[in-house]
Image 1 (cartoon, rainbow, N blue to C red):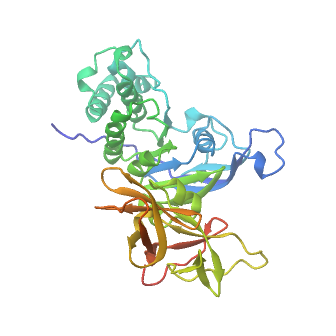
Image 2 (image 1 turned 90 degrees about the vertical axis):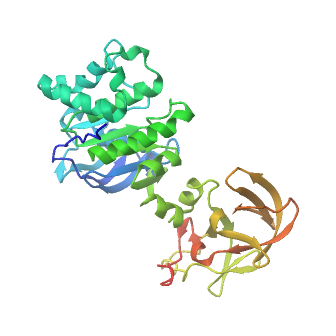
Image 3 (image 1 turned 90 degrees about the horizontal axis):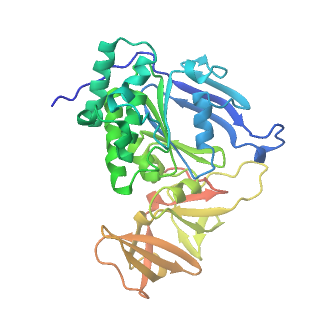
Length: 376
């Protein structure tokens, strides 16, 4: 069977968010009153983006501001440089797919997919062509004449996605936690289908989720949010390899990054009295600021158990199939290590070797080491 392409209109939007702030209070007094704080962001045509963060961090608020369902307290939204901040949703040419599928149970699958086009007076021949192509992409061709009421939740969400993709004048398609109600064993299939759809239609897509797996498998660029702020924007690899904030290190990865207490002495990082070699020079503290909390960040994947390094004791071993997660303890600090192959036994004495090219220093949560030239 053919892999049909769907042409898009040439006016897909570059989305710019400029100095956005939002509060649900009528008279916000300070930063804590804002659910979004100083958001500046650029999304380019045709990209696959994710907004990732825990519940309550401001992801859905930001999505609703982009779509026009909510007016920001401060700041502007621009599509291709044109200010759309005051435009209603219907004038922004945005399709939004929600957590719970929005479809008409009394209509057939075909009529559900056709509805956004017929609502705009599109010629029936064009409607048939578009619906047929989208149905083929979604693998729902065989159910086009079935009533939508009888569909399983995952197929209902496919139809909801299809309704967002069927128009060719859409600037951006936004997905707000679209797989929340889908059975776990079907989530992988739908995630893969969504990625495949993006590669075919090349529409700008923004995917909101608190699930790191969904974000990292769908998006080319991930925006990580915490407490209404953007803490890092980057590719999935960049977020994993070099988190710029300890929150990103902790939130992304399974298990997340080890965050270890340390002190600085003569330009060296010390953990439990042991010198730890870092990725590069430590950045100077900003002028006028008091010494901040310093911590070492190292992912479990970049620690090796052996004869050299920081002395440790094995506290627990969890075999999770592909590898083992070994909990070691140094002083009062638990350090997780991922071990391929045979793992040590509980209670064993060992040493932890930190890969220096992957060992970062953080000051007050933010990365404070520079990459060495050898690493770049």
